[in-house]
Length: 112
Image (cartoon, rainbow, N blue to C red):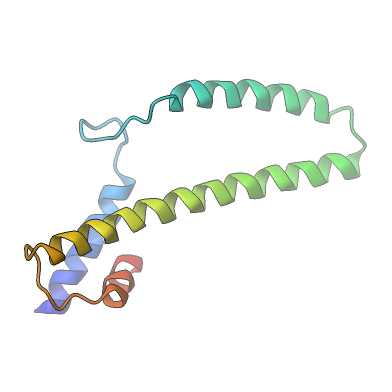
């Protein structure tokens, strides 16, 4: 029974993480949209400038930019999942969830 519950919790967390970010419960970080617009403008300028670079330098910078985007995405996902874990542990500590919750078990379930 315990495993079935954690399977459902893990599935719910994964669905929630992938839901539409325009929902009523989505958090709006101050300055995010402005920063996003500025980044898009800078990207366009950089891409135009990159055309003037030799192929080898251009390729290196494009690879770096791609890895930077990947890393940012992974960092965001890590922070998001860590928030879930922290909330669940807090609820457990308050006695609202079972007390024998092991963080390792929780992480294993969420990663599935």
